Image (cartoon, rainbow, N blue to C red; front, top):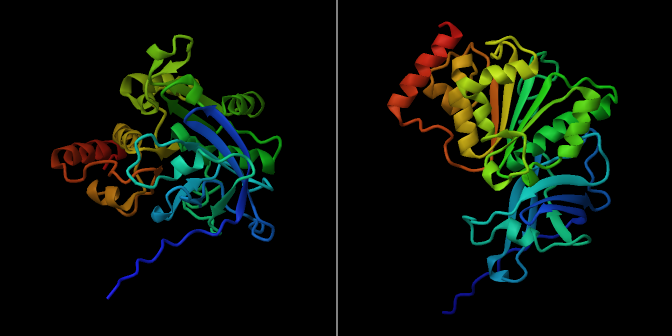
Length: 319
């Protein structure tokens, strides 16, 4: 009996790449327009949500297709194309990585977009759109995407919007990797946004005169006072009573930020972390994250580490 191997199912493309901007060989913006009739009806989505992009591997059709979720840079109030900020994955875990196919595309190419826009990494689904606290957005690399959607949405809904209660901390290896700096500088100058960009490999960029270190280093004890001063807060004033924290990026940035901010009373929303830290159900979450990899942000099997974090968090919360 001869067994027939079924060919991998391929995607039916339903969108077009209308614009591509390359910042570096491994960092680019892609703008995609859905086919007529597929554009989401207003309100299209919430700032901070994501959708799936997909491509067929036409050079190796035996690998079939690949789909990946991508945070949307565009604000819900924008019409037309949807914008994505994407890094080429040099060392992929998959045999069929999306970015290796995506980087071959030029304007006019066809692509697949999932018809559902989803995700709970939004102001409405976390602290509520009217929460008065400072919103501190911690972005590693392309983790900047949902936060751009946050602030763009504010300005599109109100051209005179005051963004002084938004803080964007953006970290990258090199200055060229700090994307959208001109746009962010405009929001600083015209709307009062607080923006700090930091470079983790300054020795390889001698022209850089800005902040240095990884983005989570802003929360080192010796640097928090500097951050507070730049935000107009009293020393010691950066707490879960005055601010909420949103993090988007890889495990290292998220884990280090969580661990460094327990001393200021910041409680993660993540259910597994809340359980490991023994946080009472009555205590509201004040730290939220969107993770790009699957590695646990904190090793919840490390009893010594968890005991230390619990003690520090209880001290900060006065419990």
